[in-house]
Image (cartoon, rainbow, N blue to C red):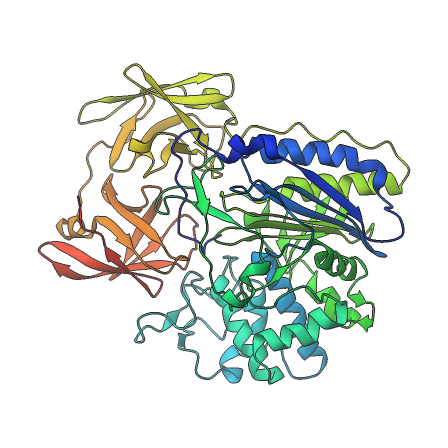
Length: 570
């Protein structure tokens, strides 16, 4: 998720797996009988293997269909220190799955004639500070992540002089945007007359009977939340096998991710989606509005090669069936929802830790098992649980890379695992979830990912010609490009470690390599006037501005309007 810049430390193989002896499974039918009981052994076995492989503490899972929540299961630990199991009554933060709740509220307001989805957002919210130089931004653009606005900052940036700036024409490109849904929360408040939590409760939770769900995350409900875990060090790249600690309490009132729920309540939500927007008290939204909700408005490759995006929900196909799905990542939770609209079945899962991935495999396997059982076909064998340490095409990375200024990097492999060989030491590398990027499992090298570059960056099968870690750059014998790069002198003052106390912004390190600046050593920055655009996406609207120099070092950067301050070098 682009909103979460805080990173997780990989310090080696230290993990929650040490508590494996306390791993537990609990399950319950939510009706007179569990309609999916025959598949539970398959699913339980897969879920246990999945959690162990990723060293995750615990998980809650619900299976539901058009008749309601049919099966709830909990796995592992809700409190690893006390070795206490996850309970079905525990609240889990569902993160960005909340965006679909927001979309349905807005579609209700659309049904009531209060919202024109194609009217400029500033007609409803004239106080919103935005420069719409490429054309008006509408609710439709915000709901589909196509506004062209940066999504990292808050609606109200820390610098009150900042005006949000669109980077391209609205509707032209998909860029996942949390700020857009924060803004939509203010739109709901404006049109409904009730602040967002009250509107969500009245419009979504009460009609669906989601009586245990909270529409806002505050300290008042913390005792009902399952204990959750986050990185012990919050300034380094994500990995699934991590050193973890109990996460602090947080407050989250933004429409980007403010809902906390139980598995059974989320089963009621899945039931409504499986029924095309119909809840126990009737339609939540009109048939036409539900079709807008799950219409593939824009290609969204961030959600997968075949995915599109509707209104607050991804739209895709699974085994020839139309599905809607989303994930949710919070500071210490990871969630997934998947609903097969053709078959009328779905699943929700949530894990009480943030380790950089989402339990999408679990919800996918659950839905496939449910479909097979309903069609009276043999239950498919769940897929083998892949190790998070296995690298796709591991052989591609093997070789010796040499630095133009001297020195070398040697990469070796054993089967599908790769290692950085330094003298007699072999340092394990874990795939970081992005192509050709790896987390370094060593405390001395955990601050940056190890990044490889292919001869043709647009061809995933072309040979690897470069490797880099932080400021260090190495090339293979296939490399044929330049080895020296001109660099503006003032850029040296931008290099450094910057930090924000806002946990959603967190930490970033700016390095200089190959004549350009890089965020965290992995995302190139592109200069345009006095700002630098992040180029992890071709059309990313996220930007950085450097300011307040002292003794040749910038003291502050603005990341899309949010301030981070320089950390003194040790």
